[in-house]
Image (cartoon, rainbow, N blue to C red; front, top):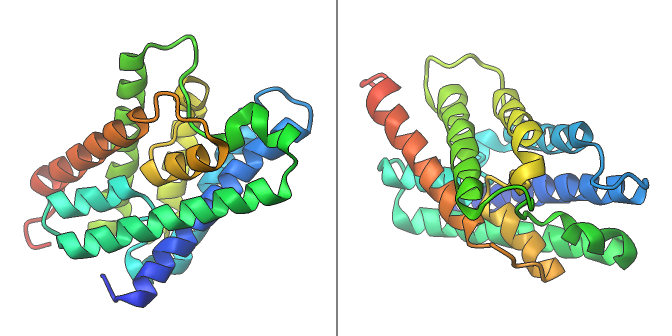
Length: 226
């Protein structure tokens, strides 16, 4: 699916949109005076942003918008290392630009209490618990990617199955870890806000979960002719 510059632009734009809308919704909820905001509103914002941009750009780059998704394609041999690195750079840059755009337009008093939407562990969950939550939620997300976008037998529903997977995951994991499921989404917000607490979790756990989901789907579920 790598078509060079046009694919890298799509990965940048899709990740930018996910982060701008998702993190923007968190900040908007904070501005509304609702501590922590409405979980449903935040989940819907992330899910819709992803669904729309996957539907719009899937034909251009495959619409990964997430290093963990790209890693799944890499470990299953469906993407070359050079292409994967280009995708990762595009995704990270998209997340960073979106985060700094948000920081430039939203008052410090609004974004600072929520760290610009950066992922972080709830005091009620252990580090191991946080790792497991992010790993399992990303496993669900990447399974949805393979089941709705990779498998040729999949229903033609655009990106909405994947967007709904993100919505579902945030409803469960949002209060526990922020339900990042995406190292780029975690990195951009952390860099712009300066909030790095337990940041490693949001790289390691999604990458493991994404790789596990991709390998299981590719080797156990996918039709051998694909």
